[in-house]
Image (tube, rainbow, N blue to C red):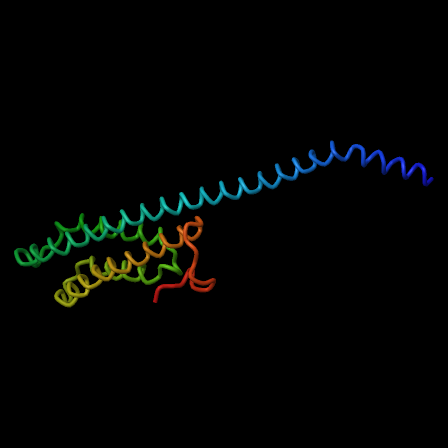
Length: 181
């Protein structure tokens, strides 16, 4: 029995130079495949995040622009025909649709402050005759606040993308994805 075992071991040792490179090659292929798959997935996620960020930036900019146009036209129109705001209804409808579309594209938890600002703007855009001056002051303030908060959100998203893509290291483990105040 010892001779048979010794023969088997000698046989394996003789074939080891042929078997070992094959095993190493298989392990390298498996590890390489997993790494490539992970990198490919990371690239896809990063590309989609960049696409979302660019889309959101454009949609926010258009919403803010249309909102400011509506505020300006509203002031002019209110001076000339204060009792008839019906001609502005198509602009108001567009602002409402754009605002709701933006809300749907935002995270209800992380972007709650921006969502609340947009909802406040939408409330102002209904153009009620009650407290017009107070409403328009609030409306203008919300539009400015939306610009500021949007800028912060988009900057935070860009920093997250850079960290996830490996181009930037977080300052600390706990401070990498801090919430905005």
